[in-house]
Amino acid sequence: MLKYRIITALILIPLFVALVLKLPPIGFCILTGVFVLIGAWEWSFFMGVKKISLSLIYPVITLALLAVSLELPIVTLLYISVIWWVLALALVVLYPKASGIWGKSVLLRGFMGIMVLIPCWLAVNFIRNAENGTYILLFLFVLIWGADIGAYFAGRYWGKHKLAPSVSPGKTWEGLAGALAITLIIAFGAIAIQHLPLYFWPAAILLSVITVLFSVLGDLFESMLKRNVGLKDSGRLLPGHGGVLDRIDSLTAAAPTFSVGAILIGNYFQ
Image 1 (tube, one colour):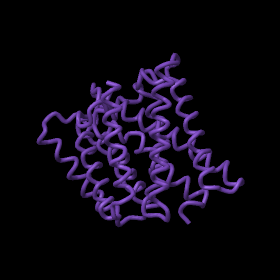
Image 2 (tube, rainbow, N blue to C red; image 1 turned 135 degrees about the vertical axis):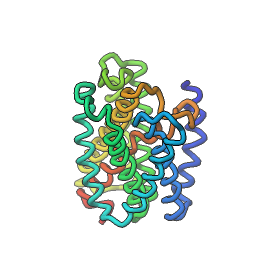
Image 3 (cartoon, rainbow, N blue to C red; image 1 turned 45 degrees about the horizontal axis):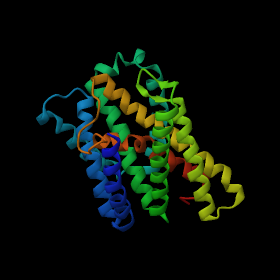
Image 4 (tube, rainbow, N blue to C red; image 1 turned 30 degrees about the vertical axis):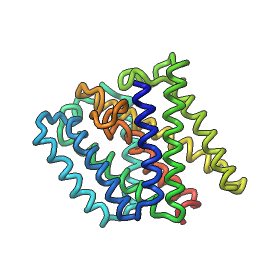
C-alpha cells in the first residue's frame, strides 16, 4: 500500500504543481470544479445511494450550486464555512451518539456534502486569484501534504494513543504531534524564505497550526461519513490513495479556514 501511495504521489504532485503555476484562472477553476464533481459523485455513496444511475444526480445538483455560488459574496460564504466546520467538530466528537438523525437522512448527508465541497472550491480559487496567489496556494498544499506525511510516519512508528477511535481507529495523538511538528518546520521555513517582519511571525505560525488542525478535522469528518455507511475508501480512482475525496478531505476544511485566517490577519488578501 505504501509503495502505491508513494508512486501515485510522485506522479500527481509535480503534475498538480505545474497546473497550479501554469493554468489560466478559468482553466484552474474548471479543473478544480471537475475534482469537486468527482468528489460529489463519491459523496453520493456516503448518502447511501446504491445505484450508479442515481449517484449521478448529486453531481448535477452540485454543478448547479457551484454556478450559483459564483454570484454570491465569496468571503461571506467562507466565513459561514468555518462556522460549519466548528459544528462538524461537534459531530465528530459526539459520533456515534449524535448520528441517529443525520446518519439515516439522505438530505442531511447531502447538505453536509455541499457544505464540504463548494466552500473548498471557492477558497482554493479565491486564494489562487489573489496577488501571489499561486505561491500562497502552493504553501497551503505543502502545509497539508507535509502534515499528512508527518502524521503518517509518527503514527506508524510511535502511535499508541487513539485520537478518535470511534471515527478513525488508525489515527493517534502521536500522529497529530508529528503533523504539528512538520507544520512548524514548514511555517518557519516559509517565513525565512519570504523575510516576513518579526511582528508577523506569531500570526503566520498560528494560522499554519490552525489550518492543519482543521485539515485533520476534514479527514476525520470524511472518515465518519465512510464509517457510517461501511466504506473503507471513497473510491478507487487513485491507486494506494482511494478516491478523490480521500485525497482532498483535509483540504476541504483547511482551505476555507486558511482563507478566512489570512483575511483576518490582513496580510495576504488586502
